[in-house]
Image 1: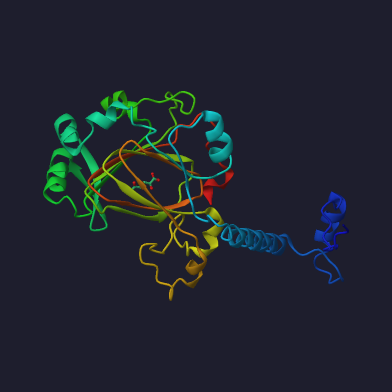
Image 2 (image 1 turned 30 degrees about the vertical axis):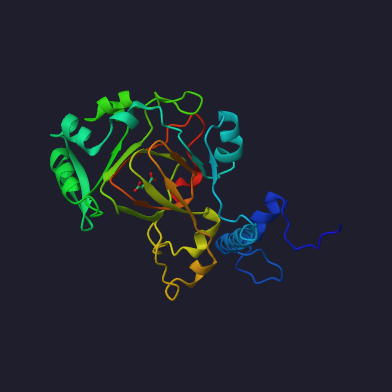
Length: 299
Ligand SMILES: O=C(O)CCC(=O)C(=O)O
């Protein structure tokens, strides 16, 4: 099949390209556009291609279905999910971690009652002793706040170091000694909400107590998500306002629920919106044995 020429020369010799740039001032037919305009056109082309792929994926009969597995080999996980940038719900993946039997809000109050951590309430961050936080959480188990969100790099050197003993990292998937790894601890009553956003790395969200609902959107839909603040969308996928956000009508949203013992693989760039369905404790991890740092992280 003969391809129509677009007129673009992908192998233009560097000398010719440079001299065409140097002659930018003199208007000539077919002169090379300045690099800024070229870059913009390239981005527009890439965006159009990505948008078309998103529309094509939506034609699949099972569009939006998220794979689930109760047992997965590291080879399958790597080739079908990690390297393919596809999410999967790993049912029971952390069911044998001691944390599943031990962790509860009461356990944290007993073991770490005097530790002060950041909690979010009324849109503000403040510091609270774990004992007081758990007290509020138990008195208002459906209030949606306060929400304890703590990040550790790494967990074993933090004030909650003892929690490390309750985790069991399978060395076929995780590097237990990765000192760059970030651990996120998320604890709160039912109805806590983390708005639609994406992370800068591949993440495993391990559910250790209670239940959560996660809405997931492919990175291919990024141009339909009204991302004004870096990495965050203005759209609430629970109640999308199609008058303000009309492009969101063309977005495929997948919904899955996590039970204690399950883990959700959240690939880099995938948008997620997380609500707890009961009092809940989760841990997010990124200490995979495979590369987990990307040039696009800074975007
Ligand atoms: O559990 C949550 O509320 C949010 C988790 C999350 O967004 C993450 O681990 O990246």
